[in-house]
Length: 199
Image 1 (tube, rainbow, N blue to C red):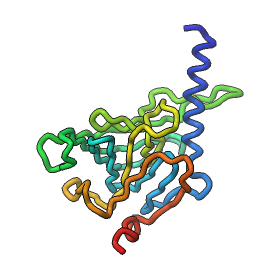
Image 2 (spheres, rainbow, N blue to C red):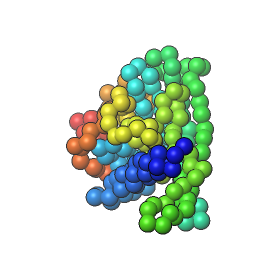
Image 3 (cartoon, rainbow, N blue to C red):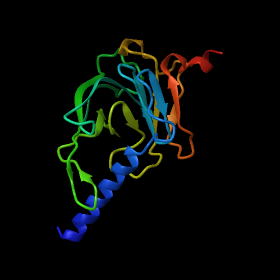
């Protein structure tokens, strides 16, 4: 590969990481018991389930652990995902595909006059065939890691649930979000997430 092409590819990757790392800076990060809803990302607290929908495929994701490494720039998480491929959205069926995995974003090395490059990172949540970008803690983006920001048919719904047995994708309290570049960022306490739906 010619050096100039290699540089362009690296630059593209770095710019995507810069854009993601800057999300949510205008209102501050969500607290430990808050859900952050932004134009291109939803950030979940620990142990709360976020639902994912693409057409008639359903997925559920929850984060079990967040931590940092030697510095605050070394980001790690453990998540669980459940994928339902029979189009019913019923996560009690035996055909649900379960996954438990680790996400990593090590600090990497500094390239002078440029940006920090991280090698050995693992920044995609996997749920059946669905792949979604992760950049630390409970972040779930509406697109894959190397996709330009946009609507790819992914919908996300933060929930108050902590156990997969509680999930009902047809619950009337659920609010589904799509990518929306004009949406204002907001932090919502988990216990108020469905308040307006109950009224």
